[in-house]
Length: 227
Image (cartoon, rainbow, N blue to C red; front, side, top):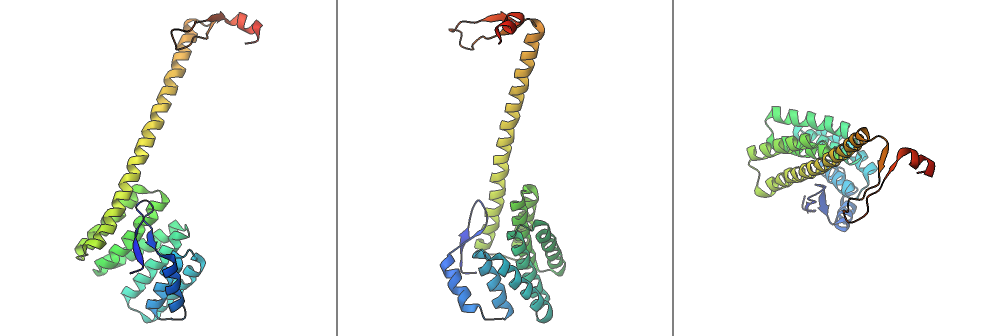
């Protein structure tokens, strides 16, 4: 859609001009063709009106089932799943998108399969299932290349894969830091236990700074002093 200005590199969501979306929605709000309903779903989703987006997406699926082609129905179902995704119904969105992608692939419709897999990748991405997201985006890239997609279409998938890779790298660093802290804590505890075993009657109040005085007192003396 021409209203899409690009994609956020961190969230992968579409960037749009909300005023233009509202204006366009007002223009087509009374139209009931399948194309108009699908566009309304997209606009309502961008505007954050997810309850209305869900209702219209359900209407579009019913209309496509009654009067559209199988391709029309798959497109409507993918868009419906994208609304479920934005409503945080990840499991339902995933199930719908997997079904659509499999049917499109079976019918030899790579464009629709790519459309479904791209949205499936976004569902996994928001759900925190990064390996699954990367796999879905790579499948989308495969289908788009098979369909002869242009550079702009391929770029959106490359951007998505890059976002997953960056988040995986960030999580790997954070995990490494947590492990380092845990190891340091365990080593400190082990050293304290060893020191206590070597001289159980002594508490050490030494400072790491060698220029400062180093004190030790017996456990019994510390007890009497209320330490």
